[in-house]
Length: 216
Image (spheres, rainbow, N blue to C red):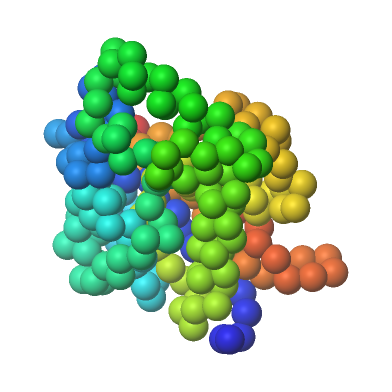
C-alpha cells in the first residue's frame, strides 16, 4: 500500500449526452450531444490550467469523449477504470423508451433496489454493490502514488462518492435516497475532494462541489 499522504482529486461529470435529452433509458454507448461537446471543450480549457499527474476515466462513451477534449489540451493519456462508471442499470433497460410500460416497471424495481438493503432487479447494481464500488473507488485514489488527479465520471456515481465522504458509515439506504433526491450536478460540473489530515485523523474532505462557472 502506498503512503496515504495529501491528495487532490478533480472530479468532472461528463458533458451532456444525447440520451440526457431524449426520453430513453441511457444506453452504454450514448455519445455527447453538440452541446455536450462544447461543454467538454470548456471544461478541458479549465482543467488545462491545473497541474495534474493522472487522468482516470470511466470507459463509457460519453465520459471517454469528454476526456478526449482534456487529453487534446493537456497531453495526458486517459487511464480507463470500471470503478468510475455510472450506476449499473439492468442490461435490458439500455436504450428503451421511458414510455415503455415494461421498461418503466423494471426501472422502478431497480430504483427500489438502490435505496434498500438486499433487493436486486435482474443484473442491475443494488445499494450494497454501489456503495462497495464507491468505497473501492476512494481507496483506489487514496492508494495511488500521484498527488493530483483528474477523474471523468458520471452524475449519480459522483454524488454517491460525495455522500460517502460526507456521511461515512451513516450512509443508510434512507440517507442515500434523501441525498440523491436533494443534490444535483451540472454536466461538466467540477467537484474537488482532498485527502488530508484533519483534526484527529486523515480523511477525505469535500472542497468544491459542482462548480460550472466555465459554462457562463
